[in-house]
Image (cartoon, rainbow over all chains, first blue to last red; front, side, top):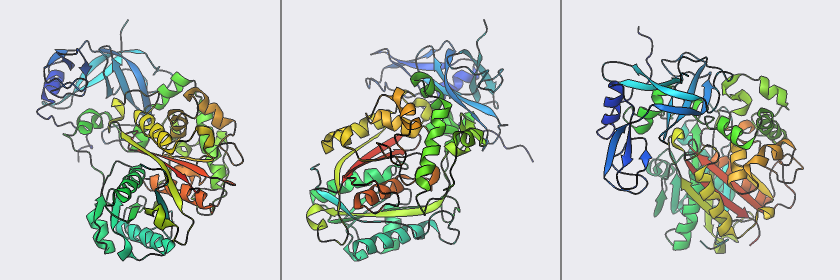
Length: 137
Length: 379
């Protein structure tokens, strides 16, 4: 029997562009054409001013570690504890949940505000997750 | 809403609390309801308003044999019952019903007749949180803690003291699940659950329920128990995704609901004799003390660590032992309300002498929702 897999997102019409982006190696955000608000998660209107005129753009993929837990138990299917569940503050403003790779999953290694950069991990031929690693340099 | 226009005239928990392997979730609703009906000296046929959460109002109302003219199925997590009290008070004032029953029950430990929670993979939580390994409240609720600690200078020892102090209250309560004294070292050496939180900083998982009965203050005088008046109320919601909170330095939902209730009650913080802040995890009382305006967040850890909220302290907090030591079936708000009502009736196991005003503050989800009820026993 296969190992239990991690929860896999299922895109909706309003989020498809985000998941198409990660598959193409891009972190895509949305910006309001009216008030310039950058927001996440995806939706076809601005949650700040309600304008329906919004644009999709490629984000820098850079951010910093806003907060996290190191989960020990119970572990989610597809995860080996201990593993960090992080919230990343993107340079463009929005925050998103993710995991931190290429880094020990310890309080000593995971310093708040440390610079991070996006890394893409394909779950299958449809879904690629945006993960983050400590920024180089 | 007018102050003191509506009162709690019936309040009870389930006959048993803790591990109840021989009763289903819906029967726990009924057990709590029947106990509250008896407490109020009423018959079920006297109830014309009904509210509950998780289970649908039609499910529980029919099981009880109630025919309501007003229902509320607001289900925003563990503070749903604070919102029910607020909505019920408005409904009674508006003349939509006269006597409201609010029930909560959860077979949280034994899982008998309880629907499993499920996150759809095409929901926003399913797309943007579940893939990163969140799995139940212990992996989600503490996510803001490290940022909150850094911003406000809160220490691990101070967060451990929340559990230590609440165990002191629980020791006075025969119905508390955990009564043995603990130390900061016990907390900081207990099993790691989700860093920075360890076992003793996470709520219990138990079975139980509770029910409240409210009616107009005019009618309340004719009931057998001392009426407990609704002095002020507040509610709000923020987001079901903890990652999308506006900030981890405070809770927007708390900062809306709490001050609304204080404004409606027309009281100052110094007037508060007794305080309940829903403590699913050890950081919640710190958020609550700050967001409700008792003190700056920076002072909250020190305030608790110095013993101000312990038995005999100047601001008795979570006097039943809280979700950390009393019980926590999954949606603890009802038990916080029950303790506030006991304190206002003057019958709590750890009674605060001469308490006249009780603030009861609830959270739903992971800071997703909030409700605040301020009670008084003086009209």
